[in-house]
Length: 416
Image 1 (cartoon, rainbow, N blue to C red):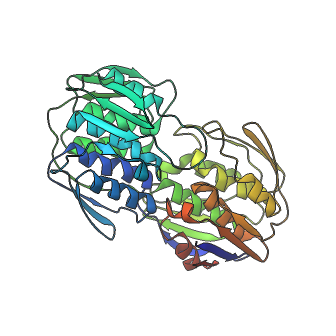
Image 2 (tube, one colour):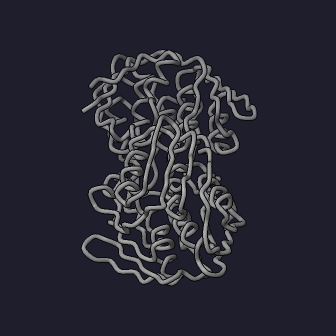
Image 3 (cartoon, rainbow, N blue to C red):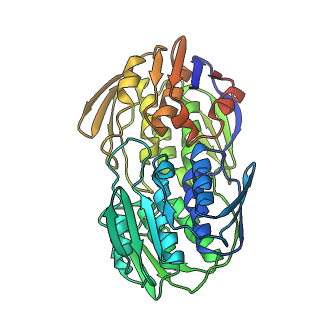
């Protein structure tokens, strides 16, 4: 099993290009199930979760041709309606096959999903939405079964904001009869990107990016060519890394408007940031100021940036309070940061972080995707050597992260 070895203490300098967004690519790849013909996608990141998605699509009878960052998907031969446990358990986003399969094949059988251990994250809101559209839902033997002669438009209110729930119902409603209105819908850029692609396929969707989305169902959709938007979490990770090492880094091929909350907090922490059309240049402060954060649905501070920001606060001047309002188990990286010398106390969904002069390198173990990134960041500023084990989590969401850091001057390498 691979590990990443880091010799800390180097200032990051240079330029880094941001990859395509994993969280945008996954629902867009699944949207190909709604069409017959060849869909072409560019700027797709090469990640373990992407590989898992393509394997699942192939198992469903879809033809997949992947080369580098370009992928062609022909769902004309879609015949299978079952997403089996051995594939779905590896990646929670596999549940996004549910809506398109019911809309296209009139039935679906999808294993209950797996993924990172950062909370229960039930799919009840997905099922509630599909039931409102007229699907018959059953849970049996670890699988969700849904069927409908044809889905019908409905008004659906999400009790809590759900990104994948919004995306699943968005795809299902695109081929439903009549009009569907989603209220308290997720506003994330990835939801907007999916809606944009669906509209280019012939769907009639308005309001994406707001809490209320209206979908007027159509009979058929056509294939599309689309480019995946930049990854805002990767962008935020490199921003934090530059601030953490008092570095100066230019981040290219990004969308600055997607990381507004992160930019605000980094400026509070003392970083200088120059914003261009599709690039950001950040200069880290000599001394990091403590900042409080609370994770919230977009456009608030992203839960996927909480662990990385906690590392920054671990070496800041003063005390910061980090509140996690999205997932109940998203502080499981704290024990590993403590091994590196961080002073963090957790009470419920709140972590109090007292900045220390320096972290000290040690072997640590990743527990989920963003925890992996936070431990790599910690290793960049820790004395001596840090070894991050179980980095397969990292490979689910970051493309060549260690190579990108090495190009910025970090002493980092992957060991097989």
